[in-house]
Length: 123
Length: 134
Ligand SMILES: Nc1ncnc2c1ncn2[C@@H]1O[C@H](COP(=O)(O)OP(=O)(O)OP(=O)(O)O)[C@@H](O)[C@H]1O
Ligand SMILES: [Mg+2]
Image (cartoon, rainbow over all chains, first blue to last red; front, side, top):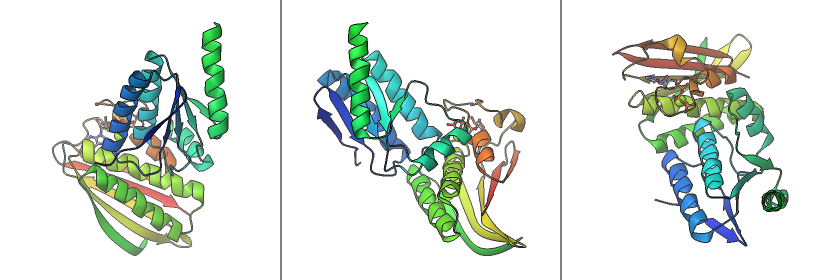
């Protein structure tokens, strides 16, 4: 089965979702990310969904799960690049992403992760 | 209501859900839906297809381009011969799930469409019809 690559940049993991994921692929991404956070002791996880044309309840649940798991493993999660049409649809679907921070693009996402990590270190 | 184009798609695997999203998208583009409307109908289709697979044990989708007077749109009819839904009102409530979902598929899809019909009989099966007008 194909897999979604996970890149490591400094103490962050970066995932760029480029395909329309079927459900098992989404589940394996969630599992692989958890393993990698532990292995690499990453402090931040950035998920780029700019190529995703929809986010349904399944993908939404995956994003929430990733955020909760990384929090337990002492990492912050930021989702970047959500298309406006996707965001509008999510709201109407009734889906909320409580533990997920969002940013417009990868640059801002990295800046947000840095800030969140520094805030935690400071407090 | 006139049917201008019709296709039947299987809902038997997770790959079928991906295929349905792609097909509904291309029909919505062909019907000149706005990007937001395309996204809404594809998202609703994804939700109901997954229910058909996970709870209905698989089934099929009848995808139709329809016309009513001057209005044109897409009608999606998902049907399965699964266990059916004992309490339809409850199933349509935001947040109700009998599994481990968020309980948003049915109620959310209803909001994403212009017309939504749910028919279900315990032991016989479930049919969900979605219409999105252009
Ligand atoms: N085709 C079906 N056959 C039998 N039961 C169904 C069917 N579709 C939905 N249901 C029932 O209705 C409930 C609500 O469905 P809904 O899609 O709203 O939520 P969910 O699938 O549980 O969670 P989510 O869609 O948010 O992941 C389901 O938990 C299930 O019990
Ligand atoms: Mg569902």
